[in-house]
Amino acid sequence: MFLRQGLVAFLAICPVSAAWAVPATEEGALRLRGVFQTYFGGTEGVVSVTPQGESYELRIDPAPLLAQVPAEQAQVSVSALTYQLTDNGDGSWGVSEDQTFSWSVVVPKMFEQKGSTKVESTGIWDEALMSFREQTSVMTDYVIDSVQYAPPLAPDPEAEAQEPPAEPQVISRDHQRTARMEMSLTGAPGKAGGVDQAMSFTAEGLEQSQEILMGPGGQPMQIQITAPSYDGSGQITGARTEGMLSLLAWFVAHPSGELIKGSQDALRDKLSAAMPLWDDLSMDATVRDLKIGSPLGEFGLASTKVTIGMSGATPDGRLQEQVALSGVTVPEGVLPPWVAPILPQEVTLDFTASDFDLAAPARMLIEGFDLTAEEPFAKLVPEQLQAALLPRGSFDLKLAPSQIKGDGYQIDYRADVAAGPAAPPSGSALITATGLDKVEEALAAAPPEQAGQPLMMLRMARAMAKPGASGENVWDIQMPEGGGPFTVNGQPMGPATSQP
Image 1 (cartoon, rainbow, N blue to C red):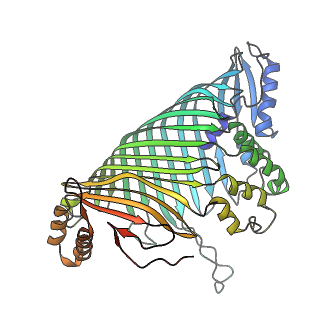
Image 2 (cartoon, helix red, strand yellow):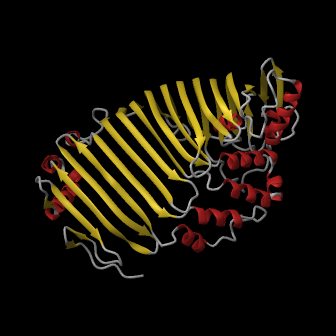
Image 3 (cartoon, rainbow, N blue to C red):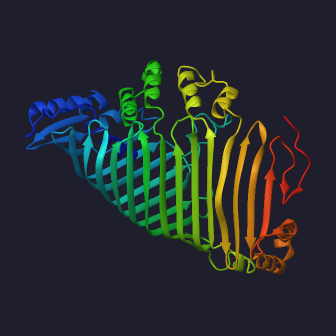
């Protein structure tokens, strides 16, 4: 779907003025065609613009461009796309579509995919923002079918020359379908430049079936995944839409490897202009009542929530991930009987990595590559890249309060650590637990060959714990700077780490 959204994003990309007054005219259509040819190239048959009353019909057919991809590398087809453009007279354009979008990709002897969906959308494209001020879209019957092949075997030097090459072996088949997806988007000028965008999305009727072949003549393994719905939201601040769209246009104008190599200095300029891509980006999604059918039976999760956040190529780099799982179910007979009472029902994890620099190494990569060389990044020195990425030699890793919760017990944990390749980690962590008697009883009742080692480790950990204010077990872990031994509740746990 990125290709479809990328094509949509080119709409009204260059300054087009309100002088193209309503109704639509042949002159306006000619000018619009020139605008889009700037971004899709001058290949005949790719772009056509036709005046239709008070709007223009824009048709983009990627086929002539995709035909330039060498067939031995890939065969890609994308259906022609049609949009209605209306000049609002204020530097914005109304954009709408109602069409079926389809595509296929074949990488010989490696991968095949076909997909299609019905798309209806309306929006307002802002010339100054180079982004939609607002957009809503609905996709129905979104279907993807994929086939993955095993990597081809190396030729046998002793095989007869006339022996035909073996047919590629299928290792997996995948079918995905989403009954309906809805998305809304808004855009506004960023306070520090670029564009701030916010989006929300929902989906209904998720189905996925996968067949994994375990080898020639082997019984295929069937996996079935279903979920009635998911929803989520996303935010991006300071998106450099102008630079990114200009970069996409540059690649359209340089469809072959030779053209790209011959203009790599211009590519450097385009990449630099697009930096830092965005200032900050975050997205979250919640999937409900997820079911996973397997040869062992049906696994389930009542709720799965994932949140991801990351900076662009900025000096103050950041990466965050949050995961929250609840309502875990497993098929009867899969787990030993003693595990069922202590199976976690809720798990949360929330970590953030920060205090690293993505701008400096990105600049080094852009300035240092040479696409004409056998090794395009051979001139780059790994130690210099590492120093640019971690100017103080380490990054901060913070584990926000997280937990594992089961029937009658709960384990909470958090940490704040500085880590890097040049020095031992330093910082602190705190773990608290309640209800461990139940966990220990379950482990003690299990066959020793299955749970003997976990039971021993649990008893050792409890022996090191100190009581909390409410009777919980507490482990206060300290990792001093400079490589000293870490401590648990004040007790050293190992020899001092040698200084670098």
